[in-house]
Length: 449
Ligand SMILES: Cc1cc2nc3c(=O)[nH]c(=O)nc-3n(C[C@H](O)[C@H](O)[C@H](O)COP(=O)(O)OP(=O)(O)OC[C@H]3O[C@@H](n4cnc5c(N)ncnc54)[C@H](O)[C@@H]3O)c2cc1C
Image 1 (cartoon, rainbow, N blue to C red):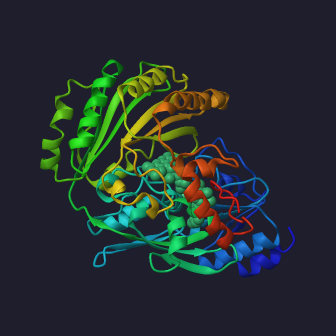
Image 2 (cartoon, protein in one colour; image 1 turned 135 degrees about the horizontal axis):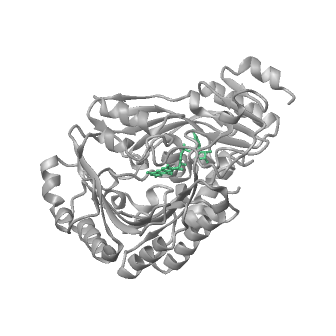
Image 3 (tube, protein in one colour; image 1 turned 30 degrees about the vertical axis):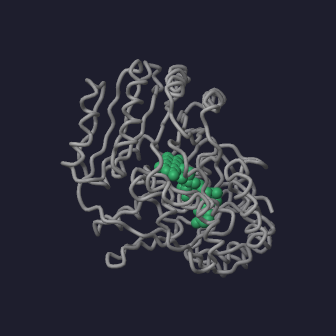
C-alpha cells in the first residue's frame, strides 16, 4: 500500500495488516456471520489520530469501516479490502457527580459508562448487554430497561465531538450545529466519526428489581394480557418485555415476562404482585440486585463468536392475534438455534420527546417487537434468517411505519428510507450532502447523497 510508511510516521496507534500475528483478532466482529478481510485495521489513540487515519483512507481511496464495540447486526463495522478505523484504543468514561454528566470516549463500551455513572449513584439509560459499543448504540437511538423512565440514550445526549469526512473537528449539541445534532441522534454513523460523547445522568443509588418469569406456551395470551395491563397502568420505573422462545435443544417453546423495576425494592414488590400471582412459573428469576449486576446478566449468553439474525418492527398495539403468531413461530424455530420473540413496552419518556425532535423514528409505537436467532452452525444460516423473515412477514399487518436502525440486518439502497420515512430521509439527505457529499461514511444504514 503506497503511503503506508509515511502514515505510520504520524499515526500514533496500532496498524495491523494481513499476515500480522494480530490480524485475525483485529478483523473479527461480534456477529460471526461476517468474516471480512480488510486491507488494514488501524487503532487511533485520539481525535488527531482519527483525522490522520481518515486522511490516509481518503488518499488511498479505501472503503472506510468505523468500529466501536463491533456489535453491528449486519456487520457494518468491517469490510473486505478497505480500512477499519477501530476505536478500541479510545475507550474510557468519567462521570461528574456535581453536573450529573458523563464524558465518554468514542470507543467505549456500555460497561464503562455504567460503571463510571454508578460509582456516583447515577445512571444513563443504555442497552442491555454491557459489551455493546456506546457509539453504535447511541448513534442509532439506544433502547434499554430504563427507557420508560429516562427515554432513549439519545434523549440524554448533551453533545458529540466528531471528525467529519473532510477531517474537521466539530462539536454538535442543541446550541452548536443543531441540525447536525438532530441527525446524529438516530442516523449518526452517516456524518462522521464520534470521538467523544457527553450524557446527562440520573440518580439511581438503590437496588433495582430484575428478572424473568417463564410459563407454558399455552398461557401466552394470558401472560401478554398481564404485560399489556402493567404497561398501561404500571409506573415509568417499570420496564416490561413479553416474549416467546425456544432454545436450541428443540424442547417445547415457552412464554416469558421480563421486568425491571427501578423504584425502591419495597415499591417494586408491591407493584409486581400480579406477576407473582399469575400462577406457578416454570422459572422465576425476579429479585433485587444492584443495577450493574443486571447490566451484566446477558453478557455471556450474548457473547462474541456466535451467528445472529434479527428482524424487528414497531407496533401501535399488541393484540392477541399477534401474540398467537409469536407463539406459533417460536414453536417452529429451527432446532440448533436459540430463537425468541421479544416485545418491549414502549412509550412514556420515549413518547414525551416529539417525533421530529431527533432523526430516530418510532416514538409513537406502543411496543417494539423483534424475532431474534442465535446459532453456531453455518449450515443453519439460511434457515435462521428465513425463520425471522417469515415471522415478521406474518406480523407485518400489525406493524407501524419506521424501524429501529440498529436492528436492521439487511443493507441496501432503500433501507434507510424505510427506517426514517420520507420526510426525515429528505432532511437527512440535505445533512449528508453538507457533511459527507462523497459518502465516505457509507458502511451504515446509508443516506445516499
Ligand atoms: C448483543 C447485542 C445486544 C444489543 N442490545 C441492544 C440494546 O439493548 N439496545 C439497543 O438499542 N441496541 C442493542 N443492540 C444493537 C446495537 O445498538 C447495535 O448493534 C449497535 O450498532 C452496536 O454498536 P457498536 O458500537 O457495538 O457497533 P459497531 O459495529 O462498532 O458499529 C455500529 C455502527 O456504528 C458505526 N460507528 C461505530 N463507532 C462509531 C463512532 N465512534 N462514530 C461514528 N460511527 C460509529 C459503525 O460504523 C457502524 O455503522 C445490541 C446488539 C447486540 C449485538
